[in-house]
Length: 294
Figure 1: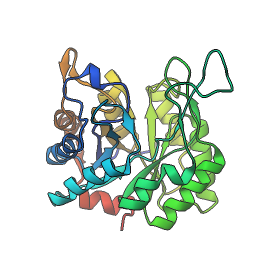
Figure 2: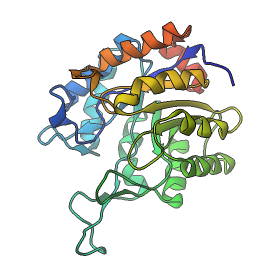
Figure 3: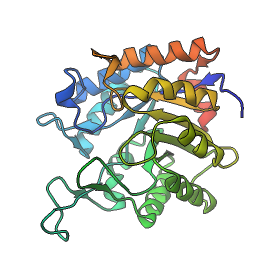
Figure 4: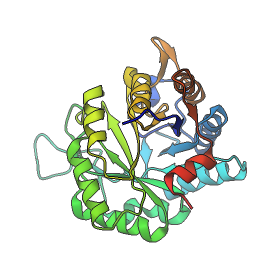
């Protein structure tokens, strides 16, 4: 296992979590999200990972119209970057304490094709596949991604010619992602994102990341990230273990203790770490080559 000297940096610019009230500048509107993507690219990110939010409430949404506006705004600038749209929305189930058979408020559980409607419409270079179910958050939230749902999504993404980035939050997710590779549902080279520190998946530490890296299939390309205060330590850890890196306001709101970050500042800090380790960030063109895009 060798350190990676040519690092693809992804910036996850907004996410869908409950962060709008915790940071004054989390991007919400399509214009803000598109501008954040351009800011991240200008700072050196090769890939931007995009969710959209309801402009009125700030909550995450699956709106095809909002995704379209964001992507159109980015493409209109002719900025060279790789667009990675989430396909992780539509699997949320909230358990009702008083009636376990009735979906609680906030449930958004839809079929595989509905989860991919924006991907089919916009055909980004990459979209994510969250490769397993898990308890999500510290209350009654569960993310449901069954094997059959994931197989259907993987097959549809393959037909669309979009590269799936398989997000793995724990070792069982990686196990099933590898199963999809074996079944021919994922084209080579398979692309993985190791997601650490999200309650209640794998913790953001060296052991968790190395454990998953040791189980990667031959020829895999992978990146990893940690949330909150572990974002920058996991940048360094991913590079040391031979992978790529992800930062952004989806995963962490602070540049340092008590100092709110922007997406551009987080990318710049990650690149400083990468550079001081003796590596360098990849251009979007280099990222496309490494990831087997187009």
